[in-house]
Figure 1 (cartoon, one colour):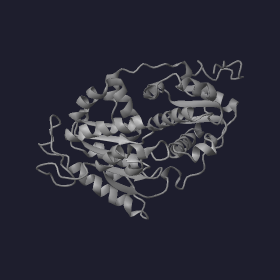
Figure 2: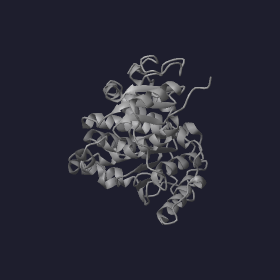
Figure 3: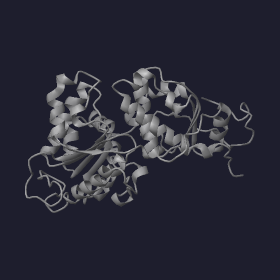
Figure 4: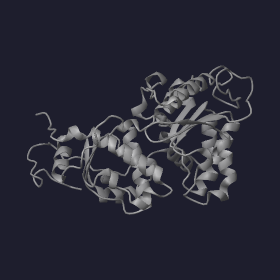
Length: 370
């Protein structure tokens, strides 16, 4: 969307027009994809002791204790970060890899703090950052697409820990790919940790004929010890409802008044996302301080909806507030989508966009300092 100050009656609010995400076509080299496999900025400072368990949910406290012991068990000279290593298990160091699961899998609803705990595990693991990898499931599959399967195995095999956030299987190809990759990494001695809203044995359910890939799914499940984390979405716990959508004029004025903001027409942005690989959505938002969207409408189809989910994740990771006009975010996805196989992704996106909309409310009425 291109809007001039004079055309919008904005006068001298801003010295220059806001940027447009639709004008960006980032190119991301493969080495950047590897280097950026660290917890997102939102989770730079999280630790186990900054996680506040709900006193009514004992599973949250238990998860902290288990993960703390898991991180401690990844220390020691044997886990040197290169070559084959024995898995060190939970708690005390072990001389050789034990039988049974070689990873931990955090299962729970939206906003119970799973990513906080996963990032805390990454920070607590006694290894150099270059020997630990953290990324979403989508980022992991994108890494394989950029490097190739064998190079990805070689790159990650020297790591002590691989953390996979938002673990989901959307199609049979991903099932086979990830099953093979994790099996190779476990064989090389890499510890695994993952979060999801779906138990390992239920991955893929409702999205494809998972029964046809039962062996691969069961193989994935065998790598993990599952920890159930109960609780309500902390993003909405005791907080006011997200602000209602603003007018086009309010959003446009806020975009011109906010240094580093972007301004886009929502339908045009959805079209643009189809031309940018999801692995580049993080780079798409580089340097953006706020995303301003006009004319938010329900997404037209499932492919578009899934791309929007990835963008919402990247914006949430980077704590970029989202100011919007049009439909409220809880009406982005149709009832059919919310009742289908990808419903957990869509509810996560609604939860995160709602939190970012709340963060953006102070942008309305903002003016640049003269």
